[in-house]
Image (tube, rainbow, N blue to C red; front, side):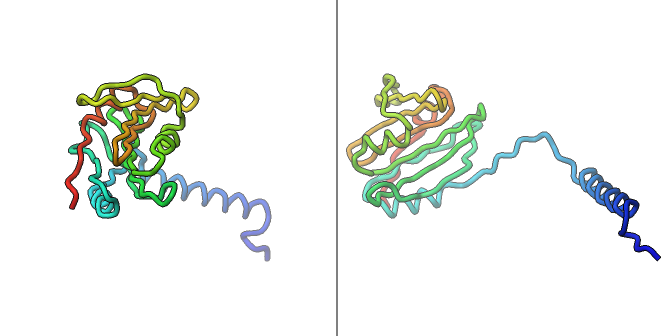
Length: 176
């Protein structure tokens, strides 16, 4: 007596069973067309960063309307300096990353975060002149603000108004 799993018919039945099981799975678990961007709370990361650096940290006082915070982390920069990264999906579903550090030299940190050292003018945000940088091959725009104790970079694929909108919600947090 031949085994059921041997030969062409056994193969055809096994293939049919697998395809039927896959079809049932897809029918019972419909995939929606809804966009799903994971929301990540950054408040603890910002607080931990504030405890690990000798200056007042900058963070959004509120998220811009329609923006979704989707990543955050603290990393070691050059020379052991702490670097804070906060990532967002904008209302237009572009990407923006806010980065800050007291890494020295500040110009090298800004160049690395913006992926370019070429200035493309300035943009006034709340009375402060932020340096614009643009890297065409990556469609990356960056706003850089070098302060005496920290360098702030707002960078991503968003347009200049969206980058400025984010820079405008940044504020220094009390040290504590």
